[in-house]
Image 1: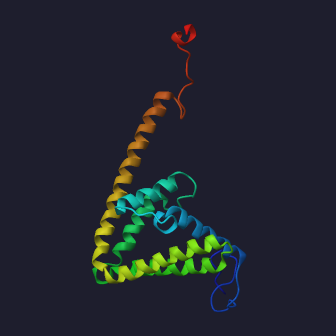
Image 2: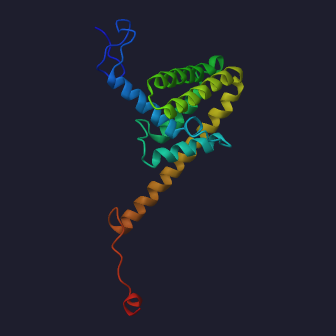
Image 3: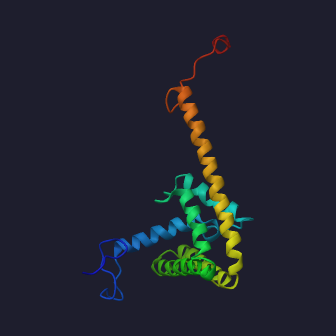
Length: 195
């Protein structure tokens, strides 16, 4: 039995014709790249961040604003997984996961660029792919920098988790005080009636 492709419906593997393109898979690819470029300030908007924490907070802000769903892991889970990818399997082959992730991402952006119709979109995908290729090369030459980056991701994950717990506690207190999820209707004050 042949395995299904990324969409779950189209054929995949060796039996798939070389020029076969599934409309569902193309839509998934397009949506994935649009979300990636929107969430990643570095890849999509060519922003420069002073720290790992700042970059992760910017991505978390975009996800929490609701324009794109945060995915099955949620925002904090994505931060945790970023640290896990940077740490790799262990000291013997730390850069392996990062190289694989960046390589897959560069390949995906290249495929999306070939399918893009609008010249602006093709340019954005091209620039994002080139950045991934640069990061691929940099990672290969700077394996020792991955551990500090992973620790920064772990710290940002921990800080985000603490903040979320605090917000949940305050929300619970306010809901208990209000008697529901919304504050009570505003009452007219005597001073406002006389004014």
